[in-house]
Length: 149
Image (tube, rainbow, N blue to C red; front, top):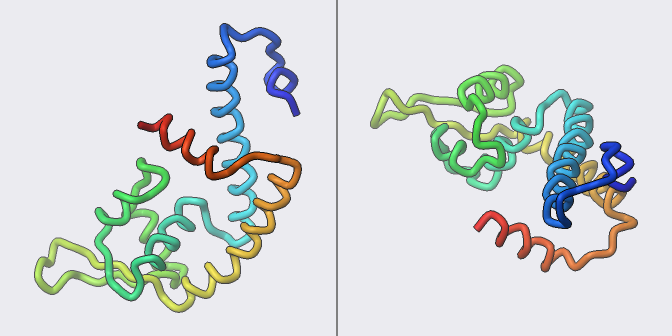
């Protein structure tokens, strides 16, 4: 669907203005697509991101600050996210023996199994969403990286 039809706006100040609006609109649209997908697994995109980060660092334990530094969404309440993941049995959280004010977090086998279940669904959805898109993804990624400086 063309941006003009989606937001019912025919005129933009410039192609740059249109591209910026289009990128924001598309990012929000993608976010919605994956939010609905994660709902079917009873988790949020932020919880998925924490699990993905913990799997990448597994079997090492990680503190909440280290997780927050590499999250896609920089504004989450990491304590509440971890509380929910702990209640679901997807992570374990322990007090650091050297510094009792620090927590150490590690993904559980149940968390790893959930990721194995989710990821083929994510991959399939990405392939569906981008099936009709012809683009050099390496160059597209370079462009997005350059935009963020």
